Image (cartoon, rainbow, N blue to C red; front, top):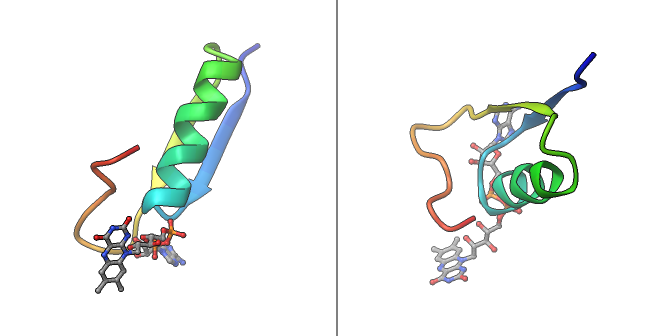
Length: 43
Ligand SMILES: Cc1cc2nc3c(=O)[nH]c(=O)nc-3n(C[C@H](O)[C@H](O)[C@H](O)COP(=O)(O)OP(=O)(O)OC[C@H]3O[C@@H](n4cnc5c(N)ncnc54)[C@H](O)[C@@H]3O)c2cc1C
């Protein structure tokens, strides 16, 4: 069964964590929760 990861905040830090976690384990199901109007475009 794949693991679910929820990351609060989709700025530089949150998006970087999401990208690195996915590189380490491509089977992860990752959700980014962003309270603001924009997500990072630089991860
Ligand atoms: C005016 C300004 C200009 C800058 N210019 C540059 C630049 O040119 N080059 C550069 O490299 N750096 C620049 N920086 C620095 C850069 O923006 C920060 O270093 C970087 O954004 C930090 O990333 P972070 O993910 O730690 O935090 P943030 O970018 O602050 O990301 C955190 C995110 O979490 C969200 N969040 C917080 N609480 C919640 C919650 N409870 N639920 C959901 N979402 C939540 C916020 O909405 C936010 O989007 C600048 C900063 C400022 C203020």
